[in-house]
Length: 163
Image 1 (tube, rainbow, N blue to C red):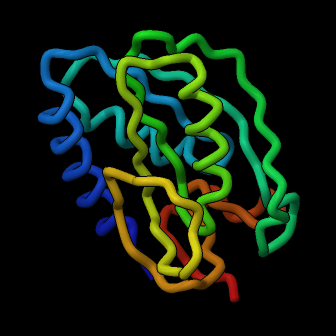
Image 2: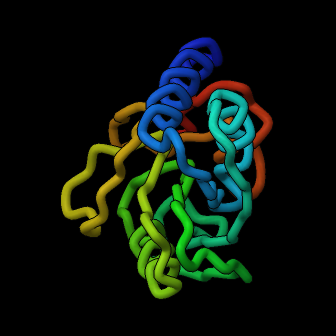
């Protein structure tokens, strides 16, 4: 569906865009585990400004192909007064990202934006703005490059359809 070379090229472009947009500021990248860890690792190497990296764990799938609608969130972050970029693997229903953004906004960051490797084109998403998007994809269940199904396929270096 999306090759390893296409991913590498787009991640490099995103890194340049983010570097320009946050020039002169220290950026705090918050990776949403487990799916975004590979994307975040590659992205941070393409960003040429000072940045800090931290993670939180969020899930709404629980070994299913469809979001359960219930988000579980675990973290111990202090982002007060910081410039924050939440890095997500896939923006589908928007439920997880909306929950994460609302939670982090309570800490009163200086700024907060979102970046997602994939944007699933589906109607009725939660109202969340994703400033940086790697690829728009159809409504298919995808794995690889950190995305999984029941903790399998994360290591695949490209994006593939499971259905």
